[in-house]
Length: 345
Image (cartoon, rainbow, N blue to C red; front, top):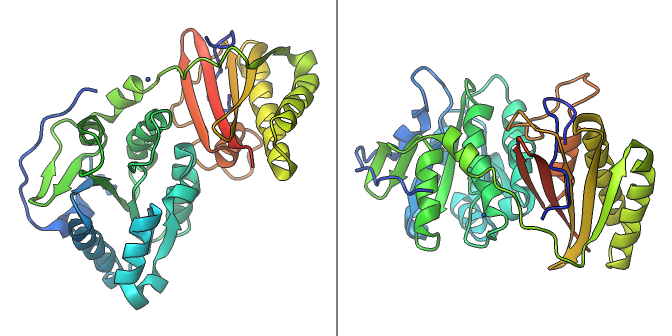
């Protein structure tokens, strides 16, 4: 549902990997991960750190951060609340030289991590090699969120190809499932654990993009389902606000919802066959919108990259990702469906 490189969604109101082999660790030099790239000659590096406890976590991440600071490189950290507090405490005065972000807030929606966290920091330092510690997949992530998380990790590789950036992604092996860890082998070209660093023999981000292009769950039978075309856009937007207000949404949240509905339904009309359906319901303190049309989004990175300066289009999905707590997208020959969640309060 973005106006740039797509045709969009599915049509009716809708109706969730294979583990890679464990490579043997090689070099014990964790700092080597800062130069490991997906392809020879590509300055971008995207290693995964598998840690069992806070000691392993701190040893590798602090070495990575301090090596960047010592080399005059801009460094950012975006990890969940507990690990952020650990790093802040261990960095001491050096914490002031690092951009620190809580991933549970900045990256609540996996679709906004690339534009709002990673690219925002890297683009602010275009002349420097940049280092970032990220942890987009933590034990509190829901099963509904997880496919969007894997897509994020896979798409980071194409979003930063050719950039002088290193993004170290941490995975808690004591709390995450074997399936999640296997997926990390496929989305990261380099792996780091207690034994050192090795190349991933399962690395295949394109296959992961295809594997996690999955339809979201169907709306409940109690959902309000609205059909729309160009003539009905205003009425559908107003009805969505009414349904959300009745569910307990107020104030600025209603403004956000109206903008999300306006962007997605307009994109369906312009790029998704001229019509679509919108399903609305409340669930788990969130307000859910599911938009389907007959279009297809060709670019997996649509809505995940900053809009080009001085361009009028291409911002619809980017805006939706910024406002929502979650955006799940399925797109194929049968159409496109967006599942969007915003907080009720």
